[in-house]
Image (cartoon, rainbow, N blue to C red; front, side):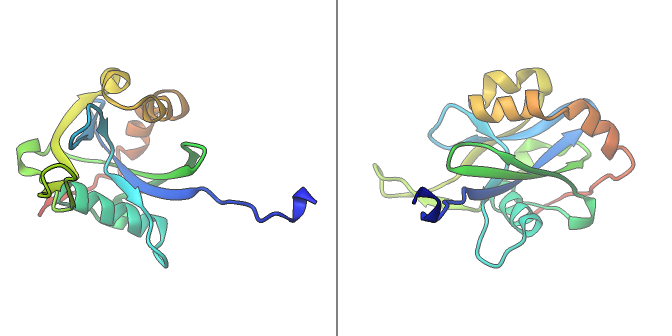
Length: 163
């Protein structure tokens, strides 16, 4: 009878891995936390994964990317309750001080609106395990080959615009 129980599908988050030829990636500091993260988040009903990734990237960094510049690097098991669908692009270096997070949440302690992300930076691939959560670090360093990805993206540069 167990086969008759409805299966639970993991939630889906979508995001973008913004890379530099110098083998660095853009990370966002999560407000109120110790870790850094990719610009990513949940997909809305009726939204495609690429549209969700583009929206989340804009909401968390202020960057507007073009869909044609993104390489689909697939859906990955992320946690027991969430999968992560990632896209990648190769960028020119943007000054992290030009980035901002227009998306906010209400802080439970202060009752004030705070940005989801409060810092941005370019970090070498060798720093991922120290900066990111263990699950994200494992995905980025063991399950994906970011150096090879940079080579694949060499001809397809994206031109992000800070909003």
